[in-house]
Image (spheres, rainbow, N blue to C red):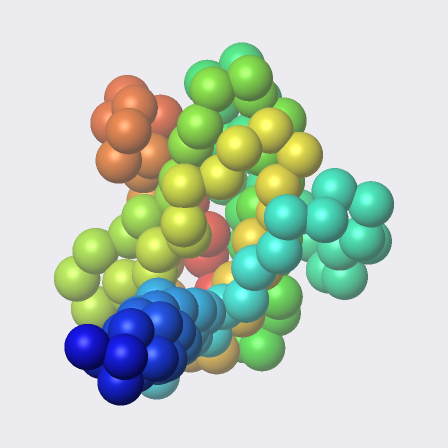
Length: 128
């Protein structure tokens, strides 16, 4: 019984580490975009930004060059995300007020996205 008490916390700790490592990936895994996130509202965004405020993406349409990093800045009091599906897929995590998430658009194309929590919210990023 004594050895079981010693190994149980170790096993739980290892399992927790594996689960956290699997959930902590911030890459989209595709060749179209890469992404990274953070909750530090004081960090500066490099490149253009899309502000989420008043249940809108502002600007609603943005044109950038390939390789541009676009930072989504969540300023609403309720959670939001930005999700594009299909060949131009990308997905931000659910962001709370003050959180930011950066997506790098590497390939030309039109990236139409919505907030999956509030599907009436639409935006477009054109990479050309």
